[in-house]
Image (cartoon, rainbow, N blue to C red; front, side, top):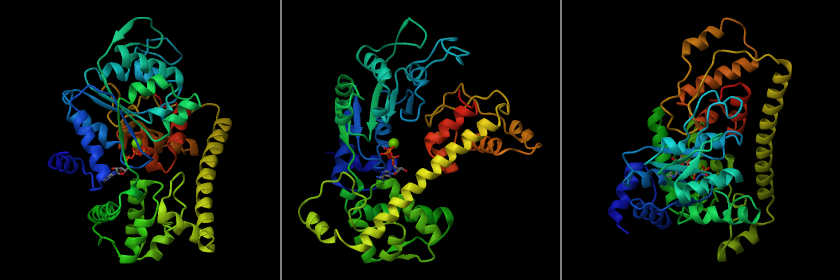
Length: 406
Ligand SMILES: Nc1ncnc2c1ncn2[C@@H]1O[C@H](COP(=O)(O)OP(=O)(O)OP(=O)(O)O)[C@@H](O)[C@H]1O
Ligand SMILES: [Mg+2]
């Protein structure tokens, strides 16, 4: 392990932490980068998987060619093959032009297939073929095309289980998994939790010109004990919330608890407990305080689901009430990757302004918000969903319902 190179990579990509497991993962990424081997990155949600494919690409011989990150979980099942492999004009309703897929535009470059466990089985078969032979066929065509793409994939689901349940092809799994890289969960990273807290507190203090929050000793201990089910993403959100909402700059365990940080087993779904930790847990198991916190978390997760359901019902009601959709213009939007195709364009702001003359229905307003947010985020759907405070799935459905798809 070359410590110096690992530190350089961390600095360049803003990766904070010194945990050995993290260093090992970065080291494997650097070692494997110059080869052509497929890499599969494992890790729970929010552990920081997305940076590694970029590290691999940038340190490979392909670094001057294209890199695309595709979230397989958020591509609608009906268009996923066309997005990945392209289609021929007229091959299905809505296929108004020939379209190149990612496997064509990323030729000689790297494709990062995020949430690869979510790919439908039919797409898995196509993917296996292209991985083994470099050959693929566009949707609606029979001509075999060639491509040269390096695949890096990531998953936060248990692939062995997905295979057992018949959801993921075993042969594809072995093909993708040539080099596995495991990103450790935050709860294992010890002092990194504190370093990350300080980094996020500093970032937000700079952004809003406020004094950074800091931890009391007890609060530090609590953070280290907490199980972080949402990992680094959860920690960042927590620090942002506390920095903005809390009047205090010195953060105590009480403040942390009021933001849902508990020192019990709540966050550790699926976590295997060891030795002393296990005993500690047995002793704490019957505390009323824990039960209250557990109920609180349960309620908040139910609340989120109710919110999603409300959105779903709401948009269905709108569709029933308004069978004639309000047509703004023919629009095309950037693809799901954070790096858009050059050929896509985003509707001019002027086009949207003209709509404002007539009073808007909720649906029109939502549509306008989506259009504007997509623009602001360069077509990145994940960021758009976050900005609009709706789930990614809801955003995809709305984009489809409103005819904003490519
Ligand atoms: N070591 C780190 N240092 C600084 N920031 C980090 C680190 N790891 C992750 N992050 C930040 O945490 C957030 C979550 O990371 P990321 O999106 O890579 O998670 P993920 O593993 O892809 O999760 P998911 O499976 O849910 O997609 C991002 O904002 C990322 O920048
Ligand atoms: Mg991810």
